[in-house]
Length: 185
Image (cartoon, rainbow, N blue to C red; front, side, top):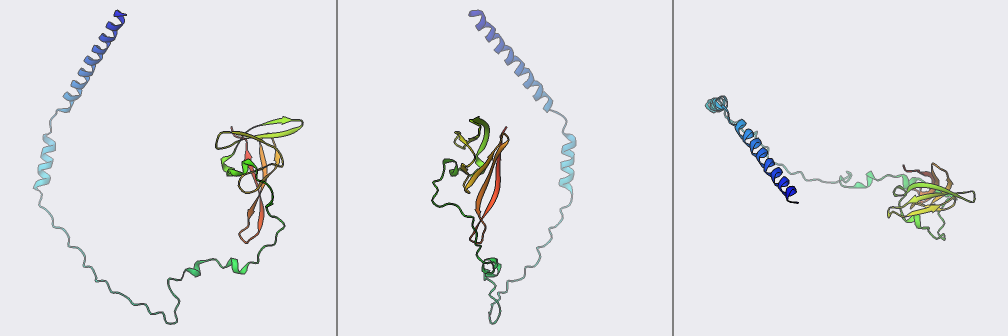
């Protein structure tokens, strides 16, 4: 025990000596001849100083009074709104989400936060293993729903989950969009 303490003490003393030698060599390298730098500084100081150009003349502000008359109001933003909604007829579609269906647990997460981490088969049925943002693993099969856009699973494969989402079409109706979740590596 004592020899180990002595070895540690000797090692620390040796490291201190090495650090002092390195510090001394670094400080010794900093001193040098600065005469060329001092000469350049003196030469720059001895140059005649040039004058500063005067600022350009600033024209005074002239206020303009707007008189509307028969002209269009320049602050009316309605010309920038798309007129599509007033021209397009409200889409009549047979596609719509079922308002009476009880949402499933995985429908509370955005689709891009869900990860497929594996598959399993049971009674000739393929199940996908889906990892949620709260790090739980849920198993789903064809017919289950996931994501926040009424995404119904239409196929579970070893490589991913295929689903069809029902999303608003922008004209008061609904449309289907195919989507998928690939197996994460």
